[in-house]
Length: 206
Length: 85
Image (cartoon, rainbow over all chains, first blue to last red; front, top):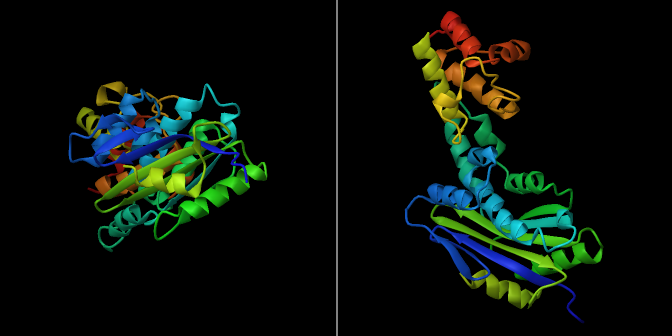
C-alpha cells in the first residue's frame, strides 16, 4: 500500500539538549531541568505567563508542540486542524507525588490547587490546544514503553477518517531522573514516510 | 501597612509563579484579576490557601473573596484586620 503520510518534522528534548530534525538548538549547561525548560521558553521569545504555572510534564509538552507547530505554521495549511496523540510511561506520577506530599499531614494540610490541576497527564495537551486554538481530536495513552506501531496505526486512522489534517504525536516521559520528550508531526508532505520503523528509528535517535 | 503590602506582593509572586512580574510591577491599587496581573480562578484558590497558611485566615464565602482580592491595598487592609498569626 502506498504511504500517503509523512513525518515532516521531529524534535527531541532531554535533560541534556533539545534538537529539531536532528540539529541541536540548545544544550543544557546546568543540572536543573526546570531552568533548562525556561531557557528554551526564552529562546522561543514566548510570552505566555501560564507557562510558569505548569508542571515539568506540561512544560515539556508545551515546548515540544511549540517548536514543531511554530516551525510549520506558515507552510502547512489548516495547522489548527492538528490532532494531538501523546503517550508516556509514568503518566503524571511526579506531580501526583508532589500533591500527595502536600496532603500527608493533618496539621500542615495545604494542598496547592495549582499543583492539583496538573495531576493528569493530558493536561499538557490541553495547554497546547488552548495555545494553538486546536479544536481537534486528542488522546493521551499510558504505555509500558514507546509503542511505534500503535501510534502509527492510530494516527493513520485519524487521518484516513478525516478527523484532522495533521497529527502531532509525542512521547513525554518525566519521572525521577528521566526527562525525555519526543515529538513528530505527521502530514501529507515531507521526506520521511510515516512508517512504524521510521517512527521507532527517530525515537531512538537521541 | 507598607511592610505588609510588600510582603503580600512577594508572596503572591512566589505562590502564583508570576515569573514575568516583579514587586515593582504591582501597584497597590492595581486590580489583581482581569486587566492587572491577569490572574485566573486557580490563582484565586491559590490565594485562599496562602491566606490560610500564612495568616490563619479562612475564606469560605466566594463573594467575600471577590472583594478582598480587588487589589493589594484592599487585601492588606483585610489581612491586617483579620489575621490570626
